[in-house]
Length: 321
Image (cartoon, rainbow, N blue to C red; front, side, top):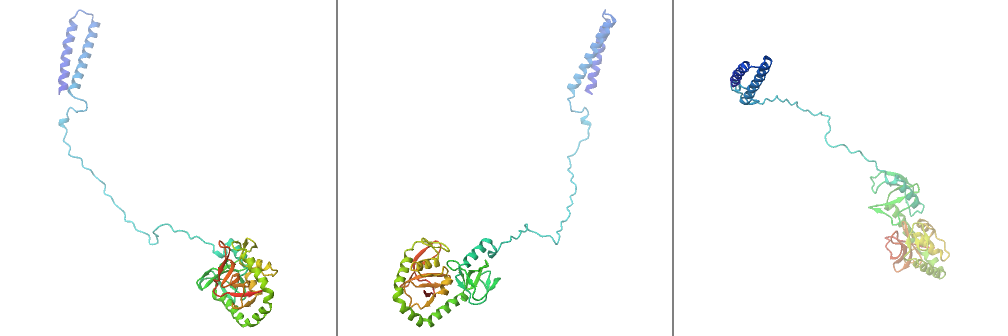
């Protein structure tokens, strides 16, 4: 409404100026230009007035617009489908694949070790017996060891319960009931008891001849106390158990095998009562030299070397060469 009023006012002013310029003594062309200038200014003035009266962005008839109520938020209905698990679905973490472990007796290094130890056998099977994969009667049988089979052992025989770990010349590592190996020792002791009379008589006749030699054997063995332990070695400064015995006897010209089982087979069994310094003490997998008074000199094992010790074997067998 205000805009219309302003436009009318501008038109009235335009008319007054137009009439004024028409009365002036100017040429018609100048009069028309002046009238146009006035008209333009009047119209411009009218629009400016209208712009000031009606700010931008406000509709002139805003009051006539119907009032709007508060906005109402409309949300679509959400439908969730039920989830059903497959009866065959497996829950939990990923399955860990089974790792195959090569058994001890199939490992190349262990096979080489078994053959090396069996080449210097320490025990003999007294009957055909299963070589078990573990120290149990329920363990798998790796093979059947025939009666009289010579087997290797560790420097210090490893026993687990009633079983002893042994090695075969085929490269197998397994366990055999210790009693079957001990039976051989018991038999040897019984043989010593039955043969004690003949052995003692033969020993007495030659005692004078061998006493000097045996003293030299003892001296030679004691001279190596402190030497290192080295498997299959019979050199001053480094010995295994049978290597020390064979070397000490070699110093007096007596040939003794470099193998505890071979020493046991070739020696003459004597009773502990008839034993004298220089005789050999045998037990499954081990030999030493008797010093008398419950003492011996032996190559104990890795890390210990050659030492003078008390007789610790439970059922020692005394041998004479």
